[in-house]
Length: 109
Image (cartoon, rainbow, N blue to C red; front, side, top):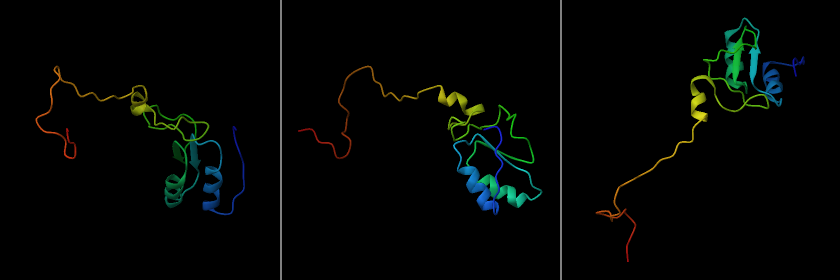
């Protein structure tokens, strides 16, 4: 959706309705109250949450990613490279030998 207009009974109801959508890329609050914004920011299910700013034009340096059908569940920007790799650990030695001591609880019989 481009824009949805809904009525709500209080701030909790508004946040509940916003979080009950299939989307979650961006959310915004227009209010002079910093306390209302802090509640909105903490409880919103969105990849970017703005206060008295437009919802579009997120900075590519900000780690937004979105959590609903409009997002990818991954923070972008600086963190994007983390999703282009598959980390693998490897313990290596050039020759096959038995260890000097076995791991506690392991017995060779």
